[in-house]
Amino acid sequence: MSADPRRQVPRTDSLLADPRLVAAADRLGRDLVKVAVREVQQRVRQGEVVPGDAVAAVVAALPGTASSLRPVLNATGVLVHTNLGRAPLSAAAVEAVAAAAGTTDVELDLGTGRRGPRGVGALAALLEAVPAAGAALVVNNCAAALALVATALGGELVIARGELVEIGDGFRIPELLEATGARLREVGTTNRVALDDYLGALTGSTGAVLKVHPSNFVVRGFTRAVPVAELARALAGRGVPLVADVGSGLLRPHPVLPDEPDLQSTLADGADLVLASGDKLLGGPQAGLVLGRADLVQRLRRHPLYRALRVDKTTLAALEATLRGPLPPVGEMLAADAAGLHRRAEALAARLSAAGVDAVAVGSRARVGGGGAPEQPLPSAAVSLPAGFAEPLRRGTPPVVGHVAGDRTLLDLRSLPPTADDCLAAAVLAAAR
Ligand SMILES: *Cc1c(COP(=O)(O)O)cnc(C)c1O
Image 1 (cartoon, rainbow, N blue to C red):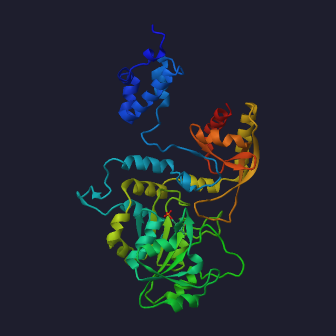
Image 2: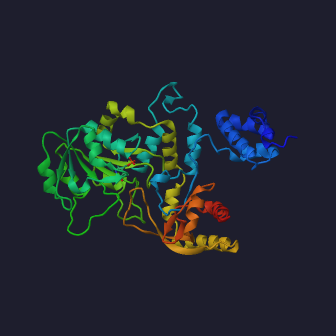
Image 3: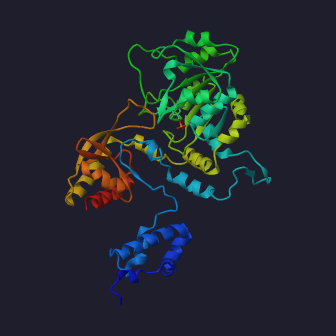
């Protein structure tokens, strides 16, 4: 045996021939396995791994999937966290995505063998969930729905100054609308708008009146907005469609979020079209939902831009399963009662304390997030740890994202399903080591 440990570094081809790594290459692709092999060879060279453990070390270093996106435990207390992929899909939606991911009958009528309308199941589920709608259309996201409406209805869009909203990360709805070539006719002031402001702005070139839900802020004091119902009554018979962007995608009123508009009520109030996101409070995949008058929906569907904005089969599958399946995780999180969350926090804190971790259960305030119900704190409970835990938790496997408040890291339990508690405890213990 040579004294030089480099001589003992197992060769790439002999490592790749090991049955465990052949299987890994079948699953993940040879390139990803080779990257892990090179890392482990380097560690053998440095004396960190003994040559006989090289294959096991490669297996341990392999990524879970061939994508670099990793599952993360969301302990931020923000239920719909845009940086963490917004709504987690339900198990039913995940199964539906897997089933539709191969070749599927998204646009084929298997009965006749002819081409069929695209995504009919998802559209039917939407119409059943929102009976006030005559027709529905699904596009890439709510921004796409706004762009399609502005392009296809065109002309001048009448909108209140108080509803020229920035949603997040520099995404400003008025800039998106203007990028389509539509002209904005702003009415009212930042804090107040009256029905007459809208009516006085209508001209022969008005394409639509647009209401945008100010999802992520509230204006208080000397304020006035015109409700959809009032606007709809005044616009009746004038031939100008009223389009309402409700943002967060509640299908119906939700008892926990009394101030959040919903699709069914907004249509019942007289809006001609409503727009919403699929991955906020609806709890489904990223999508833009357009529901309302059948003739207007048909105009949008026929517009050439629709083709550039339509969704794929996996989105249609996830959306239909979200609508027809069991309550998705976001619905469960909204419904969770505070006492149950406190019991989970106490149990976790007791487990962690028993292992020597400085962990206590505390009350906390969760939020809807994702631009929804900004003023509605949701009573919650958290496991409070020293602030130094934040980074090792974020870098762990699986990564855990909490929220740092002063000198403590809070792991809020409302944004995590109870089934994740064991995994959360294991992650904290690993971070403590
Ligand atoms: C979130 C939101 C949007 C943007 O939705 P995406 O689905 O992210 O494109 C548009 N309008 C309102 C009112 C929103 O709350």
